[in-house]
Image 1: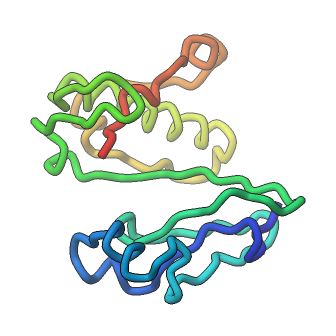
Image 2: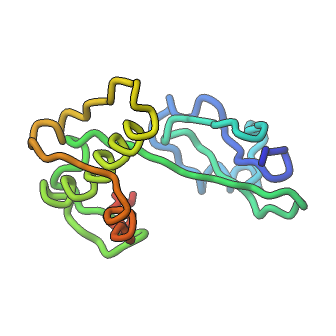
Amino acid sequence: YGCTAANAVWAVPGTHKLGKMDIAAMVQANGSERLPEAVPYISGPGDVVLHNRQLVHGSFANTSPDWRISMPLGFHRRSSVLGVHGGGLHAAPAVFDEARIRERSRMIGYAIDARQQRFSSEVPFVYQPLADTGETFHWNETVKRNIKDYNLLDFSI
């Protein structure tokens, strides 16, 4: 599926460079959440759009006949979440200690092994925090069957 102006995520270019934005104040000053500086992410089927997570962005109700598929991904440096109390947006509030970070990071190990199985001629990526533990990860039907709700370990901000 692609994205048109009618079903797209919209973003305000450059706002990721301005520090913490007061989105409520931006909306109030404009009189609408449809900010005039915002532009739609127009894309074709199979395209991927990436942006800085601090960029002011969002989507409106999709009232078009076209599907909108979004797959948000985020990355935090270990040092930026270690010891931080997560907001509990998608799961119960929790402190991100070493054990929680290690458990959530296991999915990276499984993903690396799954890709290696699919593209065996590639040199696999080495995710150093997991490599340092000496633990090995093998993507297989048992793991696939047992993976459930791992996203509940995510860091919610």
